Image (cartoon, rainbow, N blue to C red; front, side, top):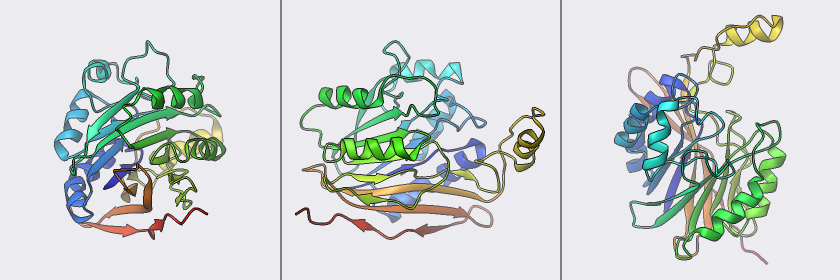
Length: 279
């Protein structure tokens, strides 16, 4: 089976390219499951019920979030009732939302999706490694394909998580920094790993925000509104091929979709990084 995690969708530009391309990508790349990190999708911070429904209608199968999950209070009923959207599993137990989800891919494979928040340079949260252990222990044994979206700032945190879960999950794919990394690989135990799959939104920006606003505040400390930028819109994500019977990743590949004139777009790929024999 083949799945795709689309990283950090920022504002209206990011939302539009996702909604325009998801079904076409799924058909062209034979995707069985599309997961989207949507914590920045509503005006650059949070998600609303209306945008949740728009993503699902566009062909998105599962939604992960991050540190901005509760910026829009109206999303709480969706987090508490819908089966295909999760909070970070290392948030407090009383925080709205579910710790994991199991969704059925187009090929019939049941896939577990887990979100975790890093701790280094992030808001105080419970231990992500202990949360990962707890959630994995609760998943049905027959669910072999497991995807972890590790929403973290530090590459060191992400590498620790990748190695810690190697052989126990199908993929540990990082989000949050908005900068795609070129370190995708299959770890020795059969887990696909990448520090960050990148941002989906305007790249003529500073992490999706207007360059002039961010530069002004950085240089002078004069507060400005970090408005979402609009130029050079791209969709970034990572595809993973997995064996549904074992849950092992077989290959991993970076994906980038760039908007062109009108509603047209072009797709660019990294090379498939395949699993190697383990001696």
